[in-house]
Length: 365
Image 1 (tube, one colour):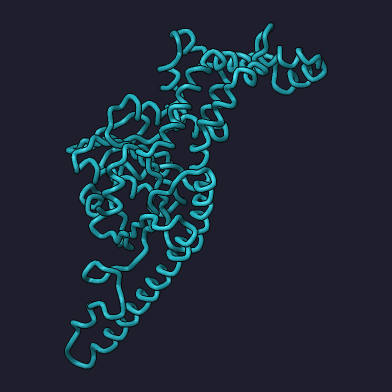
Image 2 (cartoon, rainbow, N blue to C red; image 1 turned 90 degrees about the vertical axis):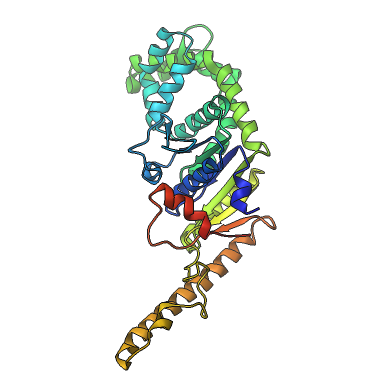
């Protein structure tokens, strides 16, 4: 069984890697392959490049799962603000509480701009799709490089934050919110200073924000624990996607080391744009048939033949360099990590047919 076929037997595949290496395309191709095999599949991208819709032939993507025509395949692109609003709509105990949260300025800022907020909502979205979606396979296309590790860390980080003792410090036990937290420490000067900087109304909203989430903390913690268990389950696969050039391999090494330090297995490494193919689809070598071999005729064709041979030599040299770079990178991976090597293409796959044919050109191990 090929590495990509083995991956397609899992129930959750998390694709991580640097930006600009075709990670989104690979995730889409993997999802298409699984759907064509009859598995009900969902692919979710957190990459803001919005290429997934084009690759799947859809007019557009947003937080709502959309069905790819002709396949048991749904796709969505995580929009942080929309996903948070949808989450609040699902978990708020009543319409009044929902409106209080959605109208809270602290919540609005958190859901749009707070560092790592996308990681928390990605965790919640993943929980919703895997637990309630009824899919055989979910493919998660993560943001580039370091942000992918934020998603892995989000469940444990959120559980720590939602610990009753920690959050209670923000909420207070008598008066509500941040105002009570500051007064409880007898810091009237700090109170006046903070109020002058932030405004008393904003302070009250800050207190309201934490008070609301204090009431919802148990549900957040329970879902975070479920996602944490999912990410560690043997039915989940982590795929590291990169390209064999120095810049992308350096970023991929950061991810590789971060995953291994967290005890997260790397179930496959994908090297995209990793070889120039000859006419037979195999990596081009010096003896590979090449169009210049068919050029025969008068001597005035010799300059064309020389140019074609020189071009082939450059491509062969690239393939040798790619091989050396991949071998050096793999030395720092666990032994026998499955490898998928994809060719340099004239253009990124932009249709379902092209995505479906991508693995036909792969070289595995």
